[in-house]
Length: 442
Image (cartoon, rainbow, N blue to C red; front, side, top):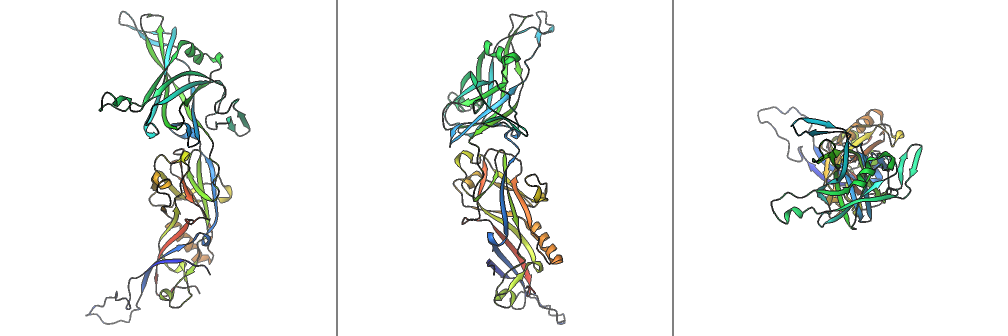
């Protein structure tokens, strides 16, 4: 017989409880006295979970609106890549007579690589040396990784050297998030680094025959972890029509993506949600129709409660947070949604149903570091009610498969970790239901 932890029994109404109320002026019509009891039960992992899968590969780092730049941060290395658009071929130049003309004979004499950082995320407490390299090998932004420049179906091309191939240094600079406060406490935090490049480098970047395909960023000192929000290239040109005038022209860049080393491997014995590419936890469960009752609940010892005959008030998946490896600690809140997997046989690409949680959970990053071991409750009441309603009609409790994933997928490089089936904090199912009189299995 399966055993369940009955956490609370509350007698809400009935003659025995003193909750029944009689009207003095009304006759006693002999109505049936109803005793309503609300019970909380914790169903252990082995009594409702059939299978757990942790599946990765949803989306890619190319889907994120930022890139990660890191060097030996808890063992993590990350390098951003980006493609260069075509150089400008004309410029609007103010003439000596005040009339603006279009100049198509441009001479580029230098420029700057502009890198914008998020100063609120990452390890920007000390100045960090930033290096820019050119990249001379083609890569595919949605699938590029540390070892492969292209990793699409039917086409796998490794870098000549892991991490971006054979590259050449373009320029270097220093990022100091707090340099602006050295002279003025009210100054804005500096979040942009300008790295100068010379005319020869500019010429190579703009010449298709040079073989330069884009740029790669690297950080010099170990222990650094930075968020790159944007990268731009600004060129300095002297128009032929006005050799006494210097103009600055922007070059568009696209496909800002990043490579990481090492890539996190699939967890063994525990659960994961999030990351980039993102991970999902898939749980197939069978809700028990009958659970252990007590003599107080159903009038006899050793009885069972038939859940198809109770009023299910609340059903929640109970997960226990686990410390995530330092390299992949969540940098912000992790928002988790739960949805039914409509065709489990089509996993990992099965379509999902509507959300099962009335309010998605926003989990703070501390839950996966200093506050690991904290229970997290994910409501699945509507799902459990639907399963029990079907069981009441068919006599059979059908299994259901749900997916746990981040609302924005992927959302960040970090991921949430939860204890697995063999742990003290293994997933459990919390049920809160109300029964009236004796409710038992036939």
